[in-house]
Length: 230
Image (cartoon, rainbow, N blue to C red):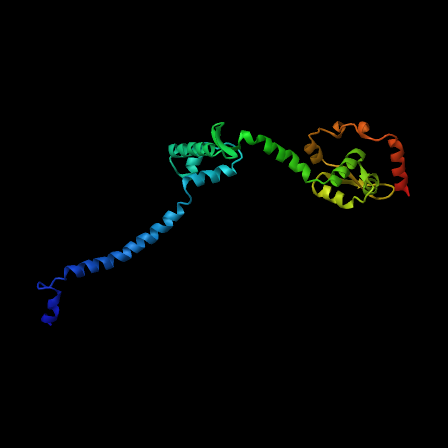
């Protein structure tokens, strides 16, 4: 028995390599545990500072103070302030379509001044493009002849306007205004949203149509009335 134990060492101690192996064996599980615990902690840190700043600035509807951002991100205010200035400088250097400005005690994205004509054209013309010529004509008839029924609108335009009126109603530009006493037909009128889109305080501010109408317009009106009556 003593001879079998002998290889462990003349003095009965465990050889150095076995000590190292045993130490490694004990340390390895602890190292794995430490890494396993550290992994989620690093993942929980989330995105970097730049990405975090951009994400916050994209959703704000008013300038946000850097101290607020620092509190949300749990970062030093000086670090956040420096990162914001770096972001602003990088957008300028890259000539982006937007820039980051410090205004009213906070930071916010704005479209770049040089892009103003493009943005204005998109906002103004983009809304008009969404309405077809037929829709615009139908809307004009309703606006100037309201309250008016579908048959009269169709008679004025010379085509069936049922689907167009439905579209205008869905868009909130036209609404039902009761029914006609004689026929029971649904009457239509423009909405407050219509005035808002045109920048008018009331229907009284609609431009006079007389200069744009053909001669003998009264005869046209009479013809429409007769056609509707029949």
